[in-house]
Length: 415
Image 1 (spheres, rainbow, N blue to C red):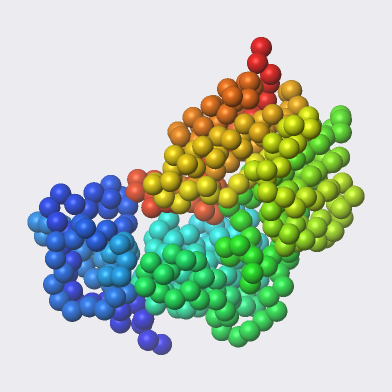
Image 2: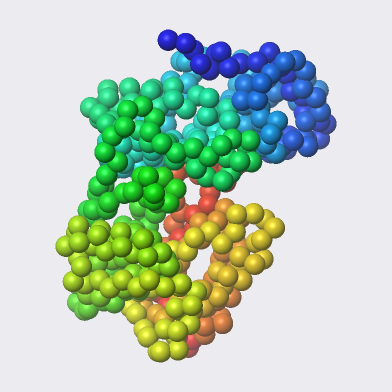
């Protein structure tokens, strides 16, 4: 078997400019194009090369891509590491062993890019199917070998993978000089997948669904809401409004928790149809209603009608994917949270989140505080949460590994 990592090592050496490389020196793994002083030796884009500081101090090894502003993605900070198939095997094994220790692995994210020291690669496991997303050229060259290793490790644990599908169709690949790609890795298979999360069943569309087919990162947050609704439902009927429901994940968890009435809202008719199917899959259709509408338009309408719910959940898409648009995003988050808060009964409960890396925890908190003031509400925080542990947050230079903020409040009238 060819050692694809070893074969991809270049003899070229990259040297940082004096005063640059602050990100990797802080623990991160990206080197930008304007931080490089020189590259000596021959290489091809996607190769692994040695990285030195301006004074010759060894910084490690990384993938080079001259077509990307992220010129180098570090593979290891160990300048003496032996880069071969065993190195790759150990990286994949460490990622899988971590998941076995921290989460239910029936469906989970097995590899999370830089946070698992495999930059640019995501692999999600949905029961007996793997879905791969490759976002960087260097890792793209290695992805099929990584999949082989992962399948081998899972087989040792008695988990047989019946198929692998690639969802490398994100626009960010174009910034790497790569084509968007989508299709089977290996033999074709029936792509219909049903998973169970927190006792709730979901159909996962790995071919046409968003990202890799399902948002696994909210698993623990959905369980927190299911538990809250279950406690509230012990002695009364509970109404829930789930906004940006997508395929019904929070709404179904609320219904499974015993909510008497759950309204699920999303702008996508296809997503709502899938949410309805998921409700049927769980025998929860009688307690749920589904609305196809733009939440940004619907919330003011509901406020005007005087509607009130025991629980309101806001799970919007990222309003910003860059620092340049953060002010506009903050305004958007503030407005939807004002409307959402006004729909909560006095003493009711409100869950809100942001999945944008650039909307950091401090700014998000400030935005929510401003929304509460504008809505004339007092907030009593119950819980602050982040993404599920199979999406680990790598401290120091997190390279966007920390992105999800999720807060549950009790909402009180001003007193």
